[in-house]
Structures are given as structure tokens and as C-alpha cells.
Image (cartoon, rainbow, N blue to C red; front, side):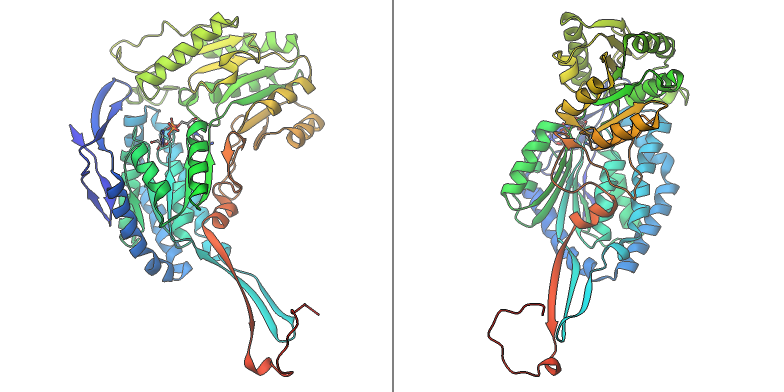
Length: 499
Ligand code: NAD
């Protein structure tokens, strides 16, 4: 049995707690490794060495720091296949999808090469007689990222890139379900020339998370995961005086207008609803066709597409559409929600309950499900299912559809399919959701914009990556200066105004 490690001071370090969590191969259901779960003392030691390394790293000029990121990108490309395989082996997603996971993180590192630009301050010469005012952006010190299982490359990279480029040291506490890729990412930083201690990976569960939240040296916490944990971490981090940005779950609606290209909409729904077995925070889980005629036509177009989905392990080739879900518990939870949908009166149009894959009977595979006639009071509508289950909720009008997406407690992403530009503009403007797609199902913004959901999908006031990340990972210091030669009038005793 492979025993995984932590990554501290540029080296793999064995866990000392004696506590471990099993890491499964979701396709076979077998345990393939165990990951150590750090104690608070182990976490504190990693933070102490990160704190020692940080001032020296911050003293390296920003352009030289950016060059380490350039080399890091080269190494990510070099190791793309290895990283993707590690992801697929522990997460279960297909290899092309795993490469996308690495690629969307890599793009954030590319953006962070521009850090010297984002770290520039402001300058006002002669703001008042002989007085200059300037501001500078300084790193926070040691920061932490707590990441979920569903993107084991992309989300750690979203945390590492801007934090490191801005001159911080960063501690990543990855998901205990698929920790191998984050460990490999940390190793590659060392190879790229990042000084030891600037990027640490501490594996663990609630004990190490609580240690992060209570550690007085850690200045900021970035979290991505489920909503209840996001809210808990946000509260505890803030009350301990830390900066926090905590991103939670999702329930993403796609509105399908009567004038939409229904083939395009159906293709988009199948890809975004069932891709990665529905385990994406930007997956579309609710289809909202406007009008019964649109709904009937859409269901007819969805059925053959869903029936022909190929489900299998990542090892069976690139034509597999999606793989297993992460754990047996996740599979049972999804199956329980499907049963609740039936009991509460939704119509199960495609029933994936009997799905079995020969040779992989113990794998965590879930067949695709399609519900119609879902209503807002049902559990399958209110809860995030995080599985290959698409719910159809029929709306009587555009306003009703807009209201549904806007009033759901989650507000991560949404999209509208229509040929009418005016409706699309109105939707993008009025919907109470953080990221919007127009005839585009998974509107994850590119790295030079920012990523963040609203309502219970995001706690905190700055988004991930893009310019917001440099605001999050730096603090502003403002200097008001006057030089002795500028004092010509003797002492002044009134409060200075900019006259
Ligand atoms: P999770 O909340 O179970 O775990 C996330 C992290 O929190 C992990 O590192 C885990 O070890 C830690 N954690 C779990 N329970 C904890 C506890 N009680 N106390 C302290 N720490 C704890 O989430 P997950 O199952 O790994 O990921 C799936 C969830 O993440 C979904 O809800 C998905 O929508 C969400 N997600 C959101 C975004 C976004 O940007 N909004 C992106 C990806 C995933």
C-alpha cells in the first residue's frame, strides 16, 4: 500500500500523527494509497518554516519571481500526462478532462507572470505643497488554501499562483480524496526554482483545517468546497482576524427560450450536466425550458443523447464521456436523492439506477438520470446533487425562469440559450448569479477575469484569480511624504487639508 506524505521545506515528509485516510481508485473501489492526516503541531511546524522562507522570497524582485512561474509553466506542460493520470486515478475523471483540469490552472499561472504589473502602487506627486503620496502593495506573509476533491490541479494552482507571485508563502491543504496531484504540483515548484518553504502541502482533515484557522501566523485563507464548510471556515477565519474568501456549492440553471437552437442547447446540457459525472461546481444541474412546447421538444432531443453516453474508467480510452463518482458515500447520496425525486413526484424520464459496468462492479459508477416536472419544493431541486442527474423544471414564462435562477440560494453560474440578443442582455443584467453564459453552458471566466459565485456559493468580497487575486493576497500601504527641503514655513498646528 502506497503511503503518501506532506511536502514541507522542499521535500516529502512522512506523516507523524499515525492517522491516515484511504485514497480510492473510484473505478474499481479499491484502496490504492493512504494519506497522512496532520496534527495541529505538524501544521504549525509547516507554517513556521513557511514564515521563515517568506521574507526572503518577498525580497526577490517581482520580475525574478515571475521567471520562476515561467519555468513552472514549462514543467506543467512537460508533466501534463503524468499529472492527468494521477488525477484520473484518484478522482476518476477521464484523461482529456483531467488535462483540462491542469490546463485551466496553468492558465492562471500564465496570468500571474504579469504580477509585477499588478503589484504596482499609485503615486500622486505634489498632492499638497511639497507632499507626495504613494501606495504600495505588500505580501500578506503566510497564506493558506483549502481545496476540494473535484479539481485537484486547477484549484490548488488558483491558490498557489497569485499567492506566490505576490511574494507570499502558501500552505495548501488539499482534499484527502485525491492528494497525489497537489503533492506533484508542490514538487514541481521546487524544480522550477522556488525556494524551499514557500509552497508547502499539508495533508489532513478537519484537525488540520482548524489548525489553519487558529494559527496566528496565517494571514489569509482561501477555501473552495461545499457550502456548509465554506460558511464555517469563513466565520472562524474572520473571527480570528484573517482575510477569507470561501467558495461553496452550486445549483446552476440553464434557461432554454422557445427561440433557442434546441440541438445546441441539448448538446450543451448533456456535456455540462453529465461531464465529470456532474461533479463540477459549474455543472448545469437544472434545465429550465420556457413553455411546455419547448420542454417537450427539449426532452425528446435529450433522450437519445443521454442514452448514448459512454460511462467507464479513464483507462478505457478517450471516447468515455464520464467516469465514476468520488466515493461510495457520494454514490449512495446521489442514489438517495434520485429516490426522493421519485417519491416527491418528479417524472424520471431516464432511469440510470440499474447501471452496471462489467468488470467494475465495485466501482463508484452512477448511470445518467433525467428528471422532468421537477418543482421548487423538491429535495432534488433544493440540494446540490453533485452527480449525473439533470432536473428539468418547466417555467411558464421568461420572468418565471429568471426568478427561479435568481431566488435559488446558490448563485454560482447560470446560462441562457436564446437567439434573441435583447433577452440575453436582460438576463445577464438582472439574474442574481455571479457568472453567466449566453448560449454557453459552463461560463468559467478565463484567467484574466475573475471567478466567484454569489449568495451561498461565495463568502467574502473578492473573487479568485485575475486582478482580484492580487488584491486578496496583498495589503496596501500608503505613504505620505515630505522632504526637509520642502519645509519653508515653520511648524503647523492645524490639521492638513489638500489646499
Ligand atoms: P468539502 O467541503 O467536503 O471539502 C473541501 C475541503 O474542506 C477539503 O479539503 C476537506 O478536507 C475540507 N473539509 C471537509 N469537511 C470539513 C470540516 N468539517 N471541517 C473542516 N474542513 C473540512 O467539498 P468537496 O466534497 O471536496 O468538494 C465538492 C464541493 O465543492 C461541491 O459542493 C462543489 O460545488 C464545491 N466546489 C465549489 C467551487 C466554487 O468555486 N464555488 C469549485 C469547486 C467545487
